[in-house]
Image (tube, rainbow, N blue to C red; front, side, top):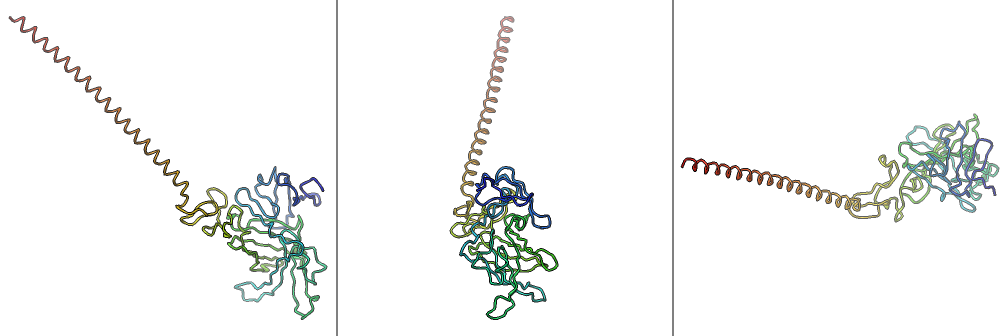
Length: 329
């Protein structure tokens, strides 16, 4: 086994091996410029140091959001993901339905490869146009709508302004008849759903397909699952623009990273804040009392000095009167 943590494809693209240790995943990766959602990233030391980087099966964008979808990869005798759809909503036309068969971070597994696609594998996304001949699957038309390779696969945020909204896995496939490369985007949206079932699949433009999959896996790992619920079922996963990271925003009466702690919101920090406030108030009161005492002592000292001065003046006057009386006698 090679000790290089990156497999080299051609001269310009390197991709992490899945078995490479995390600390060894330092590489530069480039994608073909024709892919609109392609990434061009340079990892300087480790994944943590990358501003935006592919992880083993997912995406990390600094501290803003981390998506990990390795658990969705199907292998061996497991069936791949399948959806039949195509008719776009709110349009006067009735678009033709296709069947999409796909895998995440890998090729479609053998049990899911249709007869019509036997000569088109390996592929990550298969698009099947079912002609409809009863009991004859060989006349169905099969197209490769995505391949699992460094040149044909890329990750991106669903919304760059909201890193917690979801993540997109894009595959490039074979060309359409006019030479346009097929592009399939697997859109993982953040939703409180444990199941991973695609809900829609559309051809949004010529040879451009989108498959939407709402689930926990479309949420950044900064929003934990607790009690089989996203954010413990007591909050929602959003991007914190102040902290510049994704996190759970808890409902009133709950707090904690996963909103599993019950009580006053952020009661721990509130108690600490209250204690700090009380100490501050006490210090201010003591300072004011001390200042008042100092002022009182100062005034008293001045008054005592004034009394002494008055007594001395009185005695001096008394002494002068006695001398005058004696001289007169």
